[in-house]
Image 1: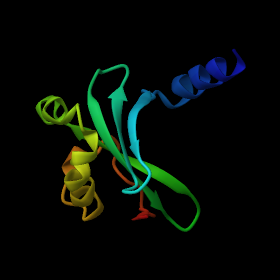
Image 2: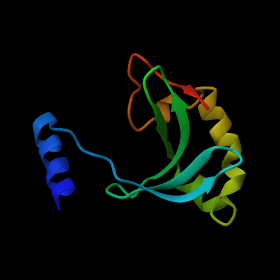
Image 3: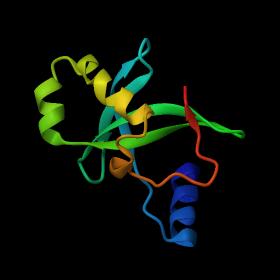
Image 4: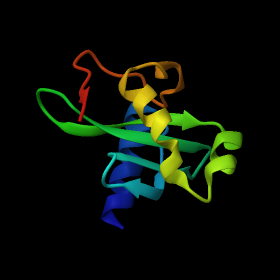
Length: 105
């Protein structure tokens, strides 16, 4: 209850929409995850990154057609994770990176 109240206060103070990512698949070997952003219903692919202060994930929008064509074997989406690591899909980021953008792990 306290956590929910805290998130509501943060949202109110900064007037931002907090994204709710629900993981559906995680590749321990290839270091990426696939899931759904609960409010929009959009799919995402996330990769871990690290900067000088913190490790975090970058979330990239994933077309429904791509998700649907791979939903029985999400590990096949590794090629998209590699494109994200090479920053070829930056236009698909859910949130723009800050000045101290992390490097992929």
